[in-house]
Amino acid sequence: MLVSAAVLSVLAALAFDLRIGGAVLAGGVLATVNLVLFARLVRAFIGAGGVSASWGVLGALKLVGLFAVVYILVARGGISPLGLAIGYASLPIGIAFATLQKPAPTS
Image (cartoon, rainbow, N blue to C red; front, side):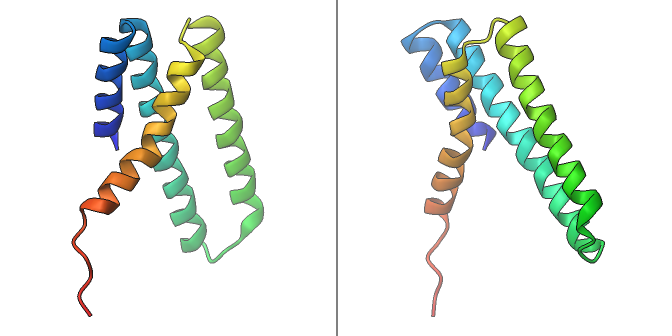
């Protein structure tokens, strides 16, 4: 998934400038970290037998943390919002390409 972020980052840097390329890379890294944290939360929730109150709070805190990081990157870090959004979109793009590369299941 980081491969698609790196490819989009290089393309953005070549098409626009290094600032946009860095923003695309930052968005891709942010999306990947968010996915890893989400997977850990889900694994812990399933392993705990489905006691949802505390995991719901942790999920909400993760979302608030994501919004806080995006705000800091855009408002104070000078990261391009469009570049960050393109980088964040590299996650589903990478997942789609990885799915296309899997061999077809045999019946």
